[in-house]
Image (tube, rainbow, N blue to C red; front, side, top):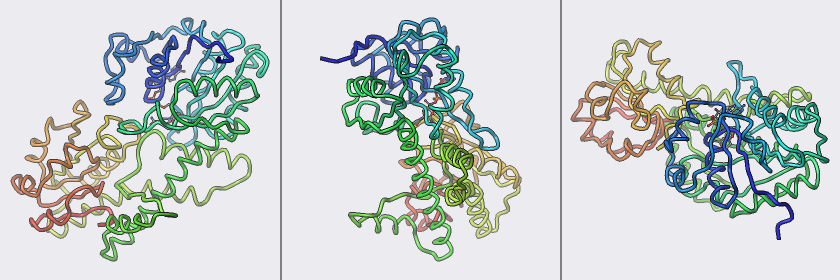
Length: 428
Ligand SMILES: NC(=O)c1ccc[n+]([C@@H]2O[C@H](COP(=O)([O-])OP(=O)(O)OC[C@H]3O[C@@H](n4cnc5c(N)ncnc54)[C@H](O)[C@@H]3O)[C@@H](O)[C@H]2O)c1
């Protein structure tokens, strides 16, 4: 017998995190209300239309329909409020907590007493204590008495064929025992995996920041190795695959033309900034962020080298950029390195064309065939299956492509070189 009688769940923020969560709660028998301030998105969802391409969502959106609203009054009856709003950085890389603040204020203004509020957005340690809790106190609640607040950081990896909201283990931290118990009961009812209680809410916040900083640092390391190996004529991909045969104490990470998405390039800034306030300077992490941020520039340098080898100038050469999304087989453009690559190419007076089969509306060309026909050189910025399955030496030769920079190291280097095409990867 469940200890707490949760019937209705309100999900605040219907994005890559909130939408699958809302659907899963509905699938598990909860009555679900999805609230979002984006009226256009709410309109589309009400009509059952997709707001982004994601196989898991597309499969389940119609199967588990839930109420969608942009009216905050609609969340009033919920027993659980889960905040899944963005946590971006501003142009100076400072954390922007405005969405977390406004979503917390919305919940505090409309929720009943004795409900559970969960923050799922990625935040640095102390945000629940310093930002979220005071909002509820100001609204007249006493945390641990008539409102219960926890943090359960989301780990979802959109587009992942194996891991999704149903099976990714979670951690949860709360301000008090009852908040923790309530959260454990709810997450154990919707996730078929371990839900680990953390001793404090601050520890739960730190878990997520550790995970994503770990990734940022490891990617930076292989990006640096790639640049070193380019000088030494060693194929970094082969070497990483060799190293990965060690069954312990090595974890393969791969270099590329840049790190994108809403998490890996963003979250470490939250740690850097908050640690600075507490008197610690994260030099290693800052260097990792810089190393990753330099990769679009390095990618364009690789193109310049390849063009030089063919006695081709940058100026007026038509360069086709294949892929705008930050990762394969999805349409998420956030922090995608493709855009910086395009800007850098334009600064070098290249003529730039773009094509992304998942983001046709923002592509200058409407098909792969069309961009190949128009381009003299290519930069592959996203390893969409539409590219990896089609970019054969024969096809490139047919269109007279002499140069390709493989920003994701996903093409057949040997076959392309054998066909007389100048191939440059990132570290191969
Ligand atoms: N995308 C991922 O892969 C991923 C994975 C794990 C964790 N996260 C974290 O989860 C959080 C959400 O990320 P996302 O990718 O779902 O973002 P998203 O931009 O896809 O969705 C967020 C939604 O929140 C809405 N919103 C903004 N302010 C609001 C408010 N005040 N009230 C109600 N709705 C509001 C936006 O309109 C948007 O629809 C972030 O903190 C992110 O770091 C994201």
